[in-house]
Length: 282
Image (cartoon, rainbow, N blue to C red; front, side):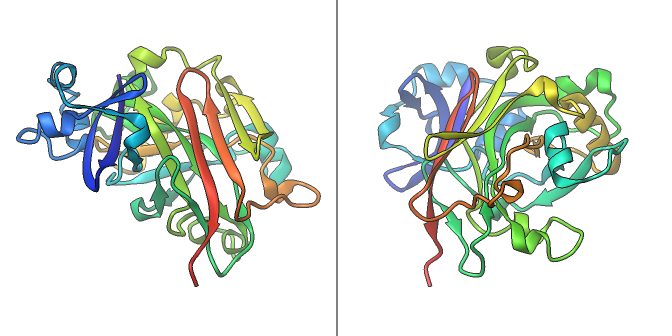
């Protein structure tokens, strides 16, 4: 299944994407699930059946919201492709580099990514988001993938000058409307094997990042294992699994996103996340 959180005529709901049509499972299951996170927690019990007869809306009439607008936590993996590690000059490490993003920093498909008024150093980072479906602590690598509810495209938009103020990532990764998440999540049974899938980031139609998930330094199972050691993973949590090389900050000259630009994150079989760039209102 492909599942999204959206607004229809100003009403927030969630449901199943079938081609160019949205099936409003949120309305059909209103007495059972408060939101998509609740459906994820219940392993989507009854969702397919409800969606089959739910009200249909063309995708063109949707206002897309972050796939999971209210995760308990968003854990982001840094420096997880060798080309990106090398372009940053960071040393090799034995464990994943983890930082956090807040839920209110996210935005949806086709919504603008906002360049804040305090910076012009807005960078792109195309990534695969992993949505946790089954809670757990101290999850083994062997069991890790059974905790995955689905996958989505993510743009971990970064305000680089704030990121580089000190040796930490958090401020530059949490400006409002900079983390794009969508258009939908796809369940593992539909997406299939990750190994050969390709991720591309395009800025105004030009490919700026291009990699396969086989090039990750720490694969998804290792990320889940590691994160579950220091925190209990909850259903609806999001792990943003790292960006390939080619980020704007490491180009000569740097390539920053600016108002009027359009950035796209495409993952094979999964979909395309597209966002315009606009300035924060003064």
